[in-house]
Length: 311
Image 1: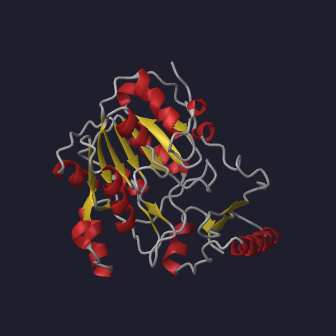
Image 2: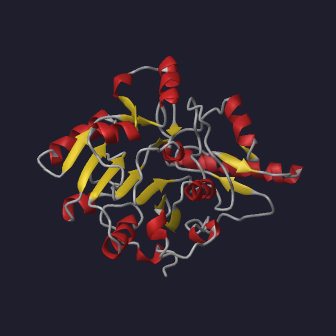
Image 3: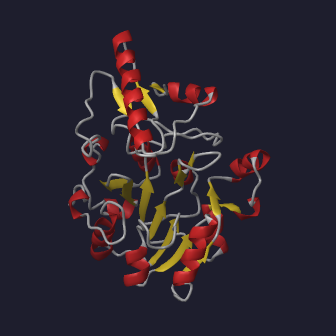
């Protein structure tokens, strides 16, 4: 029996060791040699799948929406017979696509669901690996984070391994799910919420890097011991200067000083929260990060359901 695979991390092109964890699973289990990647960028930069389709000859469906990145992807790898590059923007269901069209229909002919693009390109449902990175919290004019919702609404696809992004800046024991109203996103969905969604879809988490959760299907999970969410993802280990006080969690990412978790926080705690936000704002401005965004009321109301309050 295996426990967490966090110790098997190794970087080839991935951001934080996902390559090594995926390679361990491929080497030790009967994984189908097919994959789908949502958010392929140029095919190499921070790729979770490059090692599989480039070095291990997996058949790959590489999906990228950004025009510049897609052109680089095609220019570099279109000659590879085992990969198919498609330019699509993945939304989580048809109802959401229709709502988005009312707000902004730019290039809406390229919008689709993940199940649809897989079927349209003749990929079988039991792909070996699916990598989901549909989060752009620096997108203008509307930042978005669809990863959780894409997984939630998957129906046709039944991957053996799923690699999916999560909001690494939210502590591992907290629930937070981005709104399905995608007019404004700020945080992304939390580790705990994605962990619980995996269980509902009969997947088991086997590892967590700083940015991604790796989960396996029911068949492979028989070889793994199930651990609590907090044992896979230890929040704040990359930033030991962050101090967790009673019910007080500063939450920030590289695109926005996002929020402060403040359940039953007293006046002094709220003063500290605003002070931290001010210091973070100065620090982020010095580093030329994206400026703080004004948070709309509907998003503040959504966050409050989880006792998370943008300041």
